[in-house]
Length: 500
Image 1 (cartoon, rainbow, N blue to C red):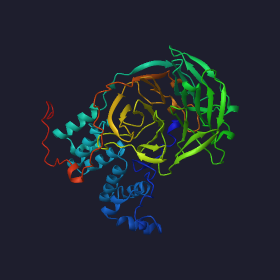
Image 2: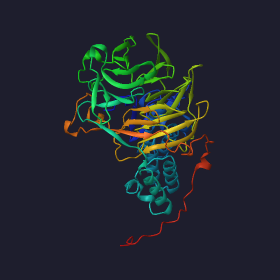
Image 3: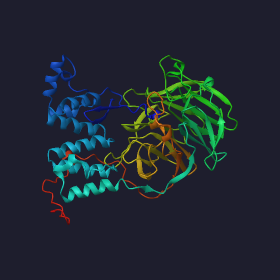
Image 4: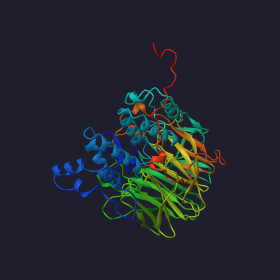
């Protein structure tokens, strides 16, 4: 079970991976025409059957569009394709949606649109294996097909110089939250299973630092941040079902806990007492010691002001919050939406912004945790295919991506990527979280399947002066410019044995 991905709620409609949320904007997003969303079931059906291409492609209401796609699938191919095309535009970070659309094109023998979609996917870095996918039977046998297949496969090859730095003991502990104690040059790790926090020795052995203590509010440790300059360890604690001592009193209870980094003594306990329930999943600490905490489920971010947690920003139109980071100068607060990408908040003006990038060359979705390093954002993309860790250099204002560089991608040790910690010029992260072994009730499915936890280390200055992926802002091409025509694609040369 991925605790930090509770906000990653995607609709699964007719095989679509479309997120159940609306666009993050100050104004309400226009919906699918009212006639298709109101009235009796028969009236809504008739209205949906008569929607025009322009009506479908002008909507920004993702939920309504996803339901329309479900309605059209198997009933109205043309309107299904229009809906899918619009969903891909609204969710440019979704490889699953693009693949589904390519398969629909292929089923109609539409080589031009199939190839165009697959080539855009490989340019974005997606690594789906389609060579033997039966859905693409009608578009095989051309040089362009072989080129697309080869490039998608190439994206699946391991990349980067990172390695497994150490292994933590196997056990029913769900060790996932990491922090770096810069003063002692030591990792700390927190357990979502029992709430304990340990110091990590060089050989991977654990030394208990803070004992489990539900009375203090230390439940599942979802995130840790060490502020060595102020001798503070911050912990995001949540009463999750996976917590071994889980009780009804812990339901929707969450705390931001403050400990002495040197002694482990509890210094503060902060919560929001509004009887609505909260889930603190991510913590970020500014250079001056200011601390922020995100509630992914409620799409809210708070800052600690004295002994009170004060709301900084809230946007119900997000699909969730899957990472939190603050710039070293404390000017910008960044957060990741697992489906929609990267956003920021100017803390001096409280004005939100999208992190600018080229959507035709860089995927910024699928983020499971987010970090700041030397003018850059570091992304752990567990929900990207392939899984990877990315470094995005930003411009001087911190609003736009200048260059993007994968640090490590598609490594054989990667299974379920967990949280991480910046340690000087290195980045440590869990490469094989055990959370998938626990069901939604927190029950361990197979104790024999538990493995040592691999802590991976990437060099944050890897290829520092290289251009990396072309990720800068570019004009969005028109449909006619972007479409690659392959109606007359030349057949691929036959290989020995093809006629046998």
